[in-house]
Amino acid sequence: MSDYSDAGSDCYDSDEDASVLDGTNDSDFEDEPVLQPKGKHKTRDVEYKTLSITQLQDLVDSDISQVASIVGLESPIVSILLRHFNWNNDRLIEKFLDSAELVLRDAGEPELADGAVDMCPPPAKRIRLDSPSAPPEFLCGVCCDDNPPAVFRLRCQHSFCEPCWQEYVTSKIKDEGLCLFRCMHGDCRTVVDAASIAKLVEPSINERYKELVRQSYVGAYSHLRFCPHPSCTETVSCPSGVGSSLLTEVPTVKCGAGHAFCFGCGMDFDHRPLICKYTKLWLENAREDAGTSQWIRANTRTCPKCQNNIEKNGGCNRIHCRHCNHQFCWLCMKDWTVHGYNNAVCNAWKEPEPKESETKAKQNLEKWLFYFDRFNNHEISARLDEELCTRTEEKMVEWQETSKMSWIESTFMRDAVDELTRCRRTLKWTYAMAYFLVAGNQKQIFEDIQADLEKAVEELSQLLEEPVEADSVKSLRQRMLDKTVYVRSRHEIVLRDTAEGLAEGRWEWNVV
Image 1 (cartoon, one colour):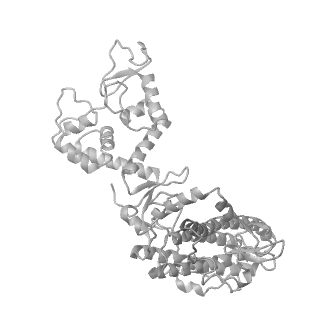
Image 2 (spheres, helix red, strand yellow):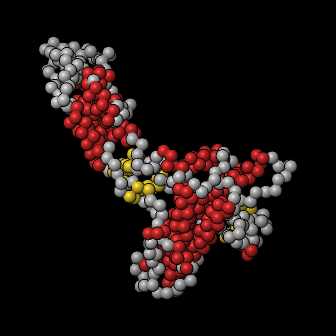
Image 3 (tube, rainbow, N blue to C red):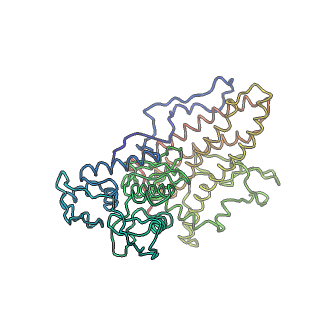
């Protein structure tokens, strides 16, 4: 296998100094804030390389050719041997040089015509794939046809009519999904080779066979993984995203088609900053909780003043009750006029005073609901922000025809929503991470940084809900651009701090 060292990352390059951007700049379109990257604050990168189908096939062919040049066998036979050894090149070569006859026999290869195997380097004989013609008198052992249109003989000398071979091979590949299957003869252990398959089946079936070979190749190497997104054919090589390293980093990668996913656990999304071990546990708990009254609680609220039920229809957590005009926070239900993010109104779990009437199970449930509500809220809010942006963009298109605003200038709201989506994805997983963290100074610092990002996200989300009129769009655009850059800088700080904490072993986890 080749060793890849190309770096790829789905992260932001930003600087803490960007926090001076507070969203109050009302300058012209030309004065747009630009966040300059500085290497000293760069997010920790995971080294990986993406591979297309062609590149992966070239990698497979290269390994086969390399081994074939050493052992002196034809490539289709070497491919069979490599799969027999689970694509362990070194082990195959070592065993083959020790006893070629034993290796070939274990893999089911037939002996040479003269019964001898002389494989001393350089090899004196090669196992050939071409077979002699069928005998004049023939009876197919499968369908008993004595006059078939064609007869095919495998290198093990077993002959059957070609239609039977075609049906057998096609069924093995298409229906059973096998790339390693044996001759139709009952006692024969010879594996059907790639050259024979190409002769027998249609091109589409042969392509499926090659795909199965590539799958077996990727499955044999821990540093290779297919992109988990549906219909994506890209492969990622990430040597560092395996083993014990998964306790100190979240190996988020992006395939050649632009799909971000976790290389460590194969989840088809970015779950930074929570490590794979606890991500799986969180999702298991969430699946068990879905569909219950706790899930309903995460999606609906009762106005704390008039007790009417309220369903959220926007991404912002500032809720205005239409029945009594009371304004409150969706998460903590506090009056919005006295609401704050820092110092702990919304984002930090407070251990309740122990009560004799409450069981430990009840306390654990309340803690779980606290974090699950916030996790689920950010997921819903991201979807609602997207819907709001789509409605507003339709109106912006109309303004382009009557104003001086160009198409590029009118994309500021889309950029803001894209950044909000990324931040809300990170924020929801910070709540899952906080659920598993042991209470203490480190968790408090983590929640303070989390609160800073959440406050900035909510402010940007509120800007999305402001009415957009032709005479105010210029001012709104500049404020939204400034706030988007500021949110991006806070997002970068959260990702960087949590990644450094994992690498330094700073986080202490609750044993669940």
